[in-house]
Structures are given as structure tokens and as C-alpha cells.
Length: 316
Image (spheres, rainbow, N blue to C red):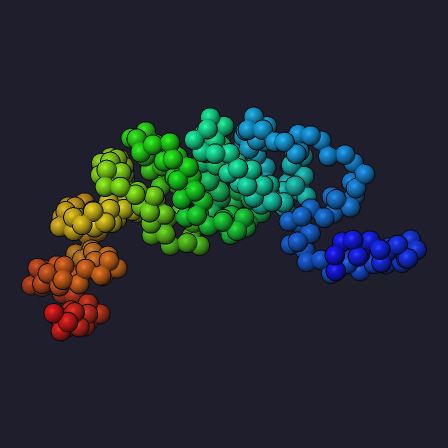
């Protein structure tokens, strides 16, 4: 029924009847809906006037709120009992982040306020990414909690930043985001693809390749100093990204050559498997066969690849 019809119907009920209706309806509202719409607070503060600042938020106000939120999160105040952040507030952190995300994205990215908003989104993205590996909030699944995947959050920031021009500074800003902790709930390739999909022109892709190569150099230097899983993994993530972009530029040979020179893996068969898998993803079956045959006498391929070779060879 319409609201006007509802008003007419409830007029005939006394206070006791209205109370029964309210209680019964409240019991039927799902918990998530109560939290999303802050129903409890509405009921408890029905007669309070909404301040103008709640209706007309400013970037200055949001900046203070986001900075304080991130500062508290970095200090573990949302992860453990303390006298600064109440238990109730700690449990509702995700609604605060969802609200920040919505309000910050309401600012056009090309305006001065919008540029500040993008920086604040970046700060939120970094702390949420950190929280996927180190207990920072009440849930390890930080991006799942706010119902925005890490790859979607990243793409949003990159699109906003690049709306101000495909410059080295703007691209570096975006590429730096690929150094965050990767959400275990999402495949790392999804994160890389989100970034790559924002590179709409050949010029943007070539610029990105050069800047990504610098990141590879930094991670490989760390790897030389300390042979750790993290240093190897991040170096390879950036290498994968570069190979992807070479392929998107139709420079498959350059991509393959770069992969062979830079990708870190002592096992030649596994390294080749990863490259062949990437060529297969892009439907580059001719290049797949050539790459396979090139190393046929040097590498004892797994049965899976041997069977694929037979299949792809028949198609020629």
C-alpha cells in the first residue's frame, strides 16, 4: 500500500495497537537491514533534529573523519577492546567505511575537492588491504564486509586519478597501489586486470610499462638482498602485469622475451607452464605451440601440457 493509505489505516488504532504493530514489524526486519539503515538510532533519536552538517557534508569534514578512522585502525583500536572506540562502534566499522566510500565518490574526480576525495579513498583502500592479512577490524574479510571487492575498489581509485590526465605522476600514483597486501579472498590476477583495464590508449600502456619496470627493479633488488616469498611474489606480479600489457599492445614476442628474462622461478618447467597458461588465456594458440616446441628438448613437460600440445597441434 501507499504511505498515504497507511496513515489513514493507523489512525483508527489506539496507542497500544500501534505499539504492537511497531514491535512486530521491528522483529521482522532483518538484522543487516537494521544496521544498514541505522534503524535503532532512528528509533532512539526520533525527536532529535538532524544537523545541517549531516545533510551537507564537506570534504574538510570527511577528511577529518577518514583520517581519524585510519589513525584509529592503524593503532588497532578497531581490533581490540579499548576506551577510545566503543564495542558497538568497533562492530559497525564496515558501515562507516561504506558511508565514506559513497560520500567520497560523490565528488567529481577532476575538481579540487574530488582530488582530495581520491586521496582519502586511497587511504581507506590501503588500510582495508592491510586488514586482509593483519587483524585490523572485527573481520579479516574486510572487502567482503563492505561488499566492494579489492579489485573494484582499486579500479575506482585508478579511474578517478587518471581522469586528471595520463601523466607519469598519476600513473605512478596508481601503480603504487599494486604494492598493497592482496586480498586472499580474490585471485591476484583480478587486481592486475582492474589496473590494466584502465589503460585505454597505447600511450598510456607504454608509459605504464616503463613505470612498472621500475617496480620490478625495486622488488628484484629486495629479492637479491633477501630471498623471501614476498619479494619474489611481488616482483612476479609486476612482471605478469607488464607481459599482459605487451600482449594487449600486440607485442607478444616482447612480452615473452621479457617474461623469460625477468620472471623468478628456479623450476624451468613451472616457469614455462605459467607462460603457456598466459598465452592460452589470451587465445594465442599459434604462439603457444611455438613456445612449447622451442623448449621441447630442454624441458620435460607435465602430461597436462603434452595433451594440450597434441590438441592445439591438430587444430593447425
